[in-house]
Image 1 (cartoon, rainbow, N blue to C red):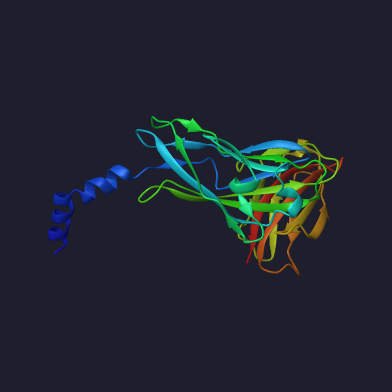
Image 2: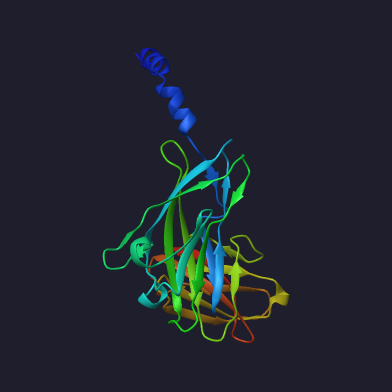
Length: 245
């Protein structure tokens, strides 16, 4: 029976069409962390892994950005076809209906070609806090589909700092139960470590010396949290995510 079905697919061309239409791509990371004081472009560019051009469909599927972060002046998204602000008929995210607009864009080949994908932010004068935005990026039936989450922090009196998912900070175990260990460069001038929940509430703050710290998680319920390392000037040096079981 299985051989008969496969033969029918091959004869009708359905099987070969499905393979030909499969388009794949990659992004550097599924989670992008950034600390933004004013204007910044937070990139997570798309690499075409097909032999020819690549058609990408994307839309915002979830966010807790506050209203003043969602204005046309504060927020936009750029892809290989251009930039769109959160305004009018091309609204990227409708906060009233909690829905995102579907965008289409063709990315050039050949395989290995890199095209732009980024959040364009101007958070000057908006409210401080830590918020997230999740975008689904896909290349159609049989192709790649990824949810990419941008976690953006704004704090008073800081400079822009975008942190890659791979850096010299080690955090373990992750997921964690009773405690979590953080190891960092002794020359990074780390003086305090804070744990925040997903909406930016401070759960605990620890003073540290040397190049490591053991953070107890007593009283912190299960969920997703962020560890922020601060230097002696009170600036955020790096942010990492972990899960408390």
